[in-house]
Image 1 (spheres, rainbow, N blue to C red):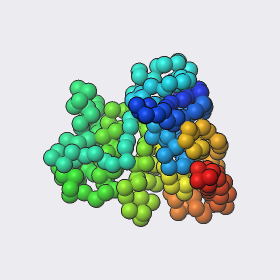
Image 2: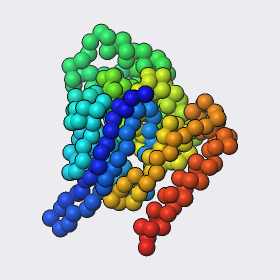
Image 3: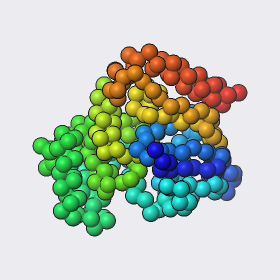
Image 4: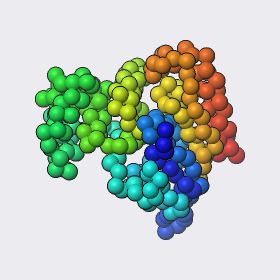
Length: 260
């Protein structure tokens, strides 16, 4: 399987009149086409900054990003970015919300509309298309936000803690269900999460970042004996606890170093 995305020596700092704060330092990793990657690291280490750089919202101060080995071509590749909050517009119905990106980019073609209708049915929201966000549960609103992201048929899907606002039980159900639906599309996915169990159960590989300025300290391929991408199924695998302990030790070491 070929590399879809490669980051080479990515560096970035935040600047203010008073100081410069280094956020990322020599970030190096590749993502294969169709791969589901999770990124974990200490709070404030620069995970969301890294995602914004991959999305092209920020330009790296050092290094380069290449898509399919063509350096600098990231702005030509369709990228979907799903944030922590659903950001649905309360005055628009669910159907109108999921069409928003198509309206802005003037892509409300019959082909795209048919695709959105298919997604609404697959994600269990077809009956609620004429409802408003306030009438839906948190999990249903996150599904709507994901459909809005997928409507433009992005090659790369960036997920910035998309389930963190949900209660724990809803999060377990929604994350595994959404992951299953995403995998059916064979999208290339990068997920940021603080939940180690979520990272292990959903991803093909986990990138562990150090404290700020973040660099890659571990790159872990995930191989579970269960093929079911749900937390409950994954947690019963004998490999699960080994992965969890390894990640826990890495992050605890970084957090303890931060306090010294």
